[in-house]
Amino acid sequence: MLNKMHKGESVVFVGQTPQKLRHGNVVRCLSVGTGQGSDHPKDVTYMEQEDFVIDYEAGTIARTENSSIPDWRSHVVYGKESFDHRDYADCSNRKFTVYVDYEYIEESEEAHADCADAEGEQLRRVRAKIAAGENIRYVVFGDSISAGGDASRDEYAFYQLFAGELRKRFEGMEFEMVNRAIGGETSVDGLKRFEDDVIALRPDIVSIGYGMNDQCTMSEQIRNGVPPGEFERNIRQMVTRIQEATGADIILVTPCESNPQWKHSSGDLAIYADILKRIGKECNIAVADVHRLWNEELRAGKTHESLLLNNINHPNDYGHRIYYEAFVPLIPAVPSKSR
Image (cartoon, rainbow, N blue to C red; front, side, top):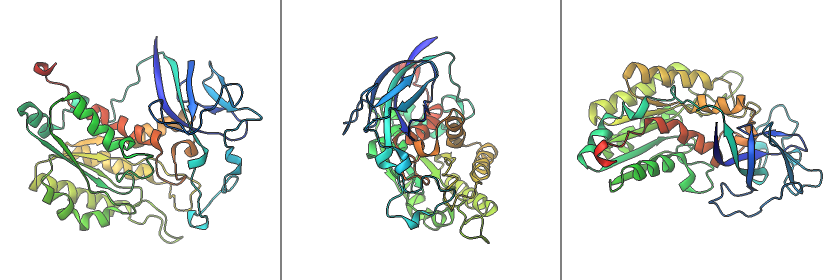
């Protein structure tokens, strides 16, 4: 067994109901506050026993009766079975989200084997350019999540965490990142601008993150804004075009789950994630399976409110880190000569 640190886990408190932390067997609480992680300036720091209590063995945290931590029961959509974000000036969880740093006992190594191939075996171009000491250009493409939606600072967005880890592992490597993601887009919109915003940039690596807006229910007659079959055709066209025109490495990013109480959630995100995984397998390209890791968080007891800052479909800082964790197995191993 090993003591590990877990930083910046997001929690939204509902009354005095215990909220499940991602890990049980908590050893020590390091910090609870409104800033993400101990390296982030905290506007408010909360006090154990005064504002919150922790059941260390069960791995739960709860507000005290007189806590100064905001209570989600005062949220505008609390108690509603369905809501439309357009009916409210603000239905986000921004003022309710608290971040927790703690140490816990890890009983076994957590595996991410299904997220992607081990040690970046599919990122052939990147590995070759690293070995040759050549510059790498990374193009981020997709919807608002890939644009960094609701990360408190750009440096906490998943693509910056991924780029930062590459720069850290391969010190001295010139690594340029260009973000061409646009909020509100579907794969249909992305395909229209694909030549100018991806192919023309001559990338070495491209991450493609669509599905969240494609799956949205638009009306009683339109379950998905972009039906699964059309979504698959759009992504396959993007993949084929990159392979033909640039030879760049490709990472398909499966989407997180949206709030099921949001009026426009179809409940079909698993279908869109499976399409991306199937394309990845058939085309022998990398897949960062965020959807799987996200659902592991939910099964461990995390709530949608604790992971989605806008309470709809945008991950908070902790959620962006879940995205990043799906990229970790893709990062190439450091060549022995560089160790």
